[in-house]
Image (cartoon, rainbow over all chains, first blue to last red; front, top):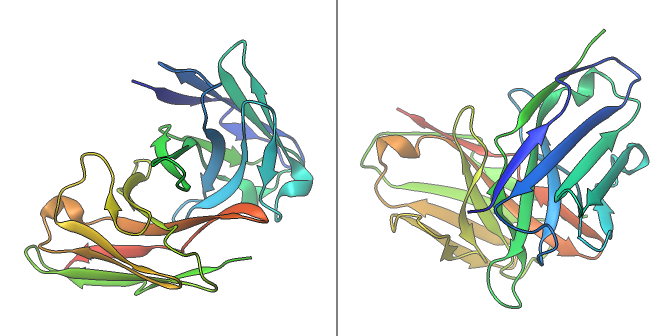
Amino acid sequence: QVQLQESGPGLVKPSGTLSLTCAVSGGSISSSNWWSWVRQPPGKGLEWIGEIYHSGSTNYNPSLKSRVTISVDKSKNQFSLKLSSVTAADTAVYYCARAAPITMGGDWYFDLWGRGTLVTVSS
Amino acid sequence: EIVLTQSPATLSLSPGERATLSCRASQSVSSYLAWYQQKPGQAPRLLIYDASNRATGIPARFSGSGSGTDFTLTISSLEPEDFAVYYCQQRSNWPPRTTFGQGTKLEIK
C-alpha cells in the first residue's frame, strides 16, 4: 500500500532554512491527490502549511506563505518543503500527508499520513 | 478565512460512556468536514469525512453528524483505546486552504 516517509535534518539554526522531503512509496505521486505538509508544535494542535499537485500547482497557508516553498520531483516520486528564516516558533513535528477525494466529486481529506519528523530550531 | 472552534477543550469520561464532541465553523462548510483522531506519538487518523461517513476500518461506535456550521462527533460507548485528541478539519476552495480546529482532548475520568 502507499506509504509516506519524511526525511531531513532534525536541528536547524535560527534564521536558517528548514528543508524536508517526503518520499511516496507504493504508489505514484502523479495520482489525483494533493500532497501536503502539516505541522504540530510540541503539545499544540495541527497547522496546515501547504500543498502541491503533481502538476506543480501549489496552495499555501497565508500566515506562512512568504517563507514557504513546496516542490515536487516526479522522477523521484517525492515532494519537498522549504521554510526560510526559521525561529524557535517553527519547532514542531512536521508531517507529510495525502489529501484525496474519498468519494467521486467529493472534498479532499487527509487519508494517509507519514509518521512525522521533529524539527528543532536552536543554535 | 473559515475558523473551526471545537468544544469542549477537554472531556473527561469513563469507558462505556457516550462522548459528544462539537465543532463549529465560522461560516457554512456545507457537509465538507472531517474528524481525525490522534494518539500520543502518532500521526492523526481519518475517522469521519463529509461530516457523517466513516473512513475505512473505523468502528461503528464512531458517528458524525451536522451540516452548515455545526457538527458533532459521537462515540457511542467509549473503549480504552478511544482516549485521544480529536480534530475537525475543512478545506475551502476559495481561497484554497485547509484549517483544523484546536482539538478536543478526551481523557479517562
